[in-house]
Length: 208
Image (cartoon, rainbow, N blue to C red; front, side, top):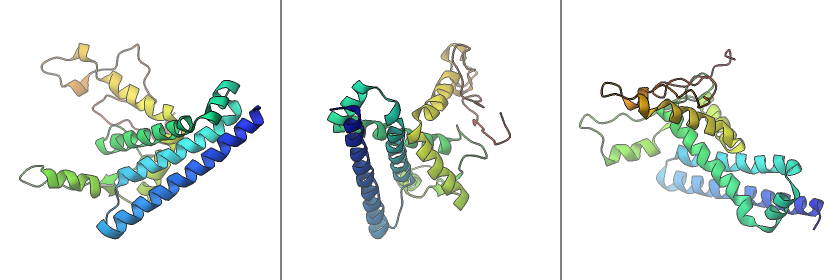
């Protein structure tokens, strides 16, 4: 088969898989809202990441080589793999938002349940998963946008992960210094506006 035929096959499969992903997410949301009256934000992040991954693959079709295009046309697994990674990266970015590793005016803020006075328990852990929501409507929009970006461009999340991991330098740790307070090694490239691992990584519109 020629390149045009292969691109057409891959495009049709991408459209089909995207439609199935949207239908699956809608079904999950409908069931959880109808029976449990809850919406897990982590599921929403994963879904947006998957859709971003599908869109990214479609955008890259015109630039990939013949061998890779032939592989995509012959294998459903290869088409699904990249969007699944996009969903995983979106969940990782969501965890970085909640932890404060990534923070700033461009990123969403969340409302989380408060731990009971007796200390965290199983009920509290379940509440974190089911009762954590964006703080405002604008934060919800930011969350959806960045979840899509995480799936569309996996390098975006990997830069934050690399910056956070490289900042925790075990060679500089002492008994008096916590692990999260290590300086980043010089040989690692940090993400833009990245700070120490224990502090937020701000990214404001006015910064270069």
